[in-house]
Amino acid sequence: MINTVIESLSSSLNAEFGSNYEIYREMTEQELKERSFLISCLSSGSRPFPGKQYFRENLFGIRYAPKREGREREECSAVAERLFSCLEYLTVEGRTIRGTGMKYEITEGILNFMVNYNLFVCRNGEGIPAMEEISGEISAKEQGKNQV
Image (tube, rainbow, N blue to C red; front, top):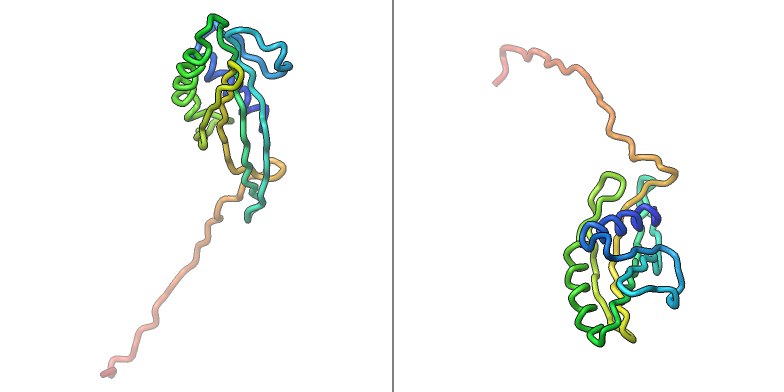
């Protein structure tokens, strides 16, 4: 599931920023090039729910390295504003999930954007069975005629 969310994040970033920006899933911070994004899952947790469901809480980090022109903070702030919009909703396995808890920090000229994508999943890919149909017949007895 994590990789599927990362793929959707990558698609959303590509749609918003285009091919002038590189998008990576794995690399070290030292390898991060100018005008590139690095997507990673920072933490993930799971809580059981009835019916073989689990609630997954996933915190993702998107790091952005701006062009080095002496205006890094300004560029990082502008990119962060665009990220708030383009990452609000993702389509993952045919369903829409909403990003929550979005925030960012600019540290040493690098944008660190965080967003949660929390969702329910079913164990072993099993869905929750739909309710089955039930049918029956009901008949009424005829009451006596001398009732008060």
